[in-house]
Length: 188
Length: 275
Image 1 (tube, rainbow over the protein chains, first blue to last red):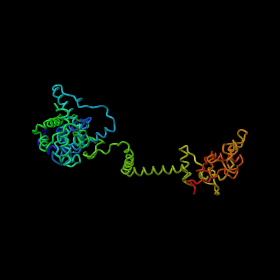
Image 2 (cartoon, rainbow over the protein chains, first blue to last red):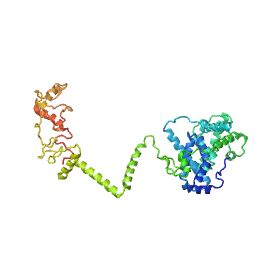
Image 3 (cartoon, rainbow over the protein chains, first blue to last red):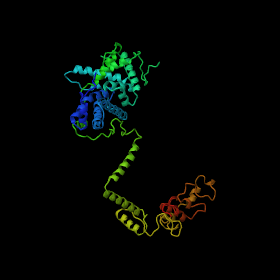
Image 4 (spheres, one colour):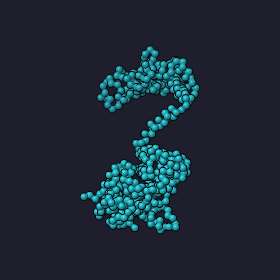
């Protein structure tokens, strides 16, 4: 599974350097967490997940000096920002027509490992399709738990729910995905 | 029992196996799971794969920030990044909310100006107010005369002689005015159309025309013109049931209208400048 420690045990030093504006520390935070944030936004169905990821990290890095806590709390803080930006982006797009339908299949793939990249892309397409068929609350919980490695309590804080409600949504989310997979066939 | 989930999504299909807490924890931890939950383990693996891609390319603004250059915050970003953005324009109702903000902004700019700038701004506003009052003949006496000359020198506006009563005021003896500062000079200025000077024909006798209109037979013999047909707009001072004036005085009524003496500003009507 994706490890909880994405900073090789050096998170306090990285955070201190980032607060001082050290470009290396800022870059390390971006490199460590931007893939999971982009994955979260992509599976949430964001139209332009990479652009939205940049917007999230502008908010993160500009306010990193205000953060207090350990790595788990920092990850929870980053995902809270990501979730709020996702909601803002949806509201913004709901007020104007989408220019064109964007698909994860349009992403460029490397030439050297085209087959592997294509397989991964198809897998992501399938996961995106599954995620879009469960309720938004269930999707929020499952993706924060699986991609952000957030605890029940951290997810509850990010979504403004109780830990008990999050646990129920998690269970129902897994059950809903299970029904969908059984109906449509096991992926791969 | 309904197959819908807690948000109304149609979840019709085969019943899902009951997931116990241990299985869910195993799924989240990436540990081995029972065969009945293998498909969920595949799903969890795919979700995590989506988060293991290379870091996305940062935008130009983020690249500047990563390079150690401070960037201006996006107007859409809230002060607290974990808070939803509240400054985005709403569908329609949010537009008026910008106006108080603009007023506050102007007030803040004035408050933040230097003392010299505030004095200059105050003097400018005061001068504009005094000149405007002078142009409107509100300032009496010699100061008003001086101001009128200044205004007339720089604008096409011209005011009456300062000794004349103000526009719309009554005569000096308390008689109703004509709107031009003269008192009760009815008939002195009669339209040339009414007197026949212009074409040799005297003016049209209004009441005689009215008597030929439909419904004239139903009118009492001493009734004035039908309501709303008062051609002079003379209001309460107009030609009433006391009798038809001579043709030359009827023309005078039209003359009043030419002078703009309607019911609101007509002879003797109350105006803001009346005492």
